[in-house]
Length: 424
Ligand code: SF4
Ligand code: SF4
Image (cartoon, rainbow, N blue to C red):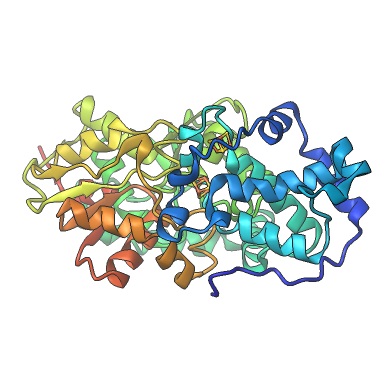
């Protein structure tokens, strides 16, 4: 990918329709965010993209400014009566390109929000840019296709149920290798009355360790038919994102579970936990569940399981944006004696640089360039193992380690915990 991301120059849709899409996003919070920026610049150094590639368009305020200029052009008096005064932007092919560049070079990490005196949420402002891109048919088609595939799976789940059950049965041996006392089957599938519904990702790596841990804790659980990831939420398509989540909500209600445990995937967790409202069941991140098992003595971990120097990367959507911060540290400290923090860490941690759909979209050149600061932060820890609790972060940190020749291994926390399980 080129450094300047381009959506093409032909918006190909009426300005009136785009204006309507913009207007639908204009609730009171959004108006406040659009109207209250003091241009103090305190957010500038917050953004890992700017810290790695110092260009104004990669600052939070620079990105938001593209949307603000369109806002002023169509929704403020100055734009209606004196657009020649500048500070406004017509909705045309060029502005659509600028909106794409702003929205899809932002990972939605919200680190800038922590430093803004007005708490301006750049990710929310970027949701306008994304809505306009969808309206102009200039959204990333790959994300759109992946979101559609998730929705289609929800509509045809009966056709794939038998194959999925067989695929789960084939993993039995792998689960038993981690926890030999696992019941039969080792991965219970859609069992009504289970206490926990575990929502995994595509791929056995997101299932086997989790199954071993829940079996070791003698949890009443079953696995979902659906994958947790919500590509529509990266895309900024609110309707599709709801449909993707609804598949899991319906399943959880049908099975009557108390809790839905989300695999190590920050965006999926944040969406289901914080963005859909109460549904009659609790939503937990899987790392919270491991921490709870440990605290209640339902599992025991070998405190010397990992003797290498280890550090932890806080996934933005799990830590800064959802408050799951101390739980993964407690689990990690229970199995690795040589733990060091990254600097900065917790709410202040640098984004991995792969969020907002960038990993799914490929975008390797941009991801590597825009995350130089993250690679330096990883190297500075001197750790040989970087642990995280998010699939997206895991992919991006692994790519960074390879690209910048850091020689660091990236691990999922759940995998380490499952390997450290003690019997008896
Ligand atoms: S810190 Fe907040 S108010 Fe200051 S420039 Fe950034 S977004 Fe605007
Ligand atoms: S949300 Fe993150 S990536 Fe986007 S502008 Fe703010 S700091 Fe940068």
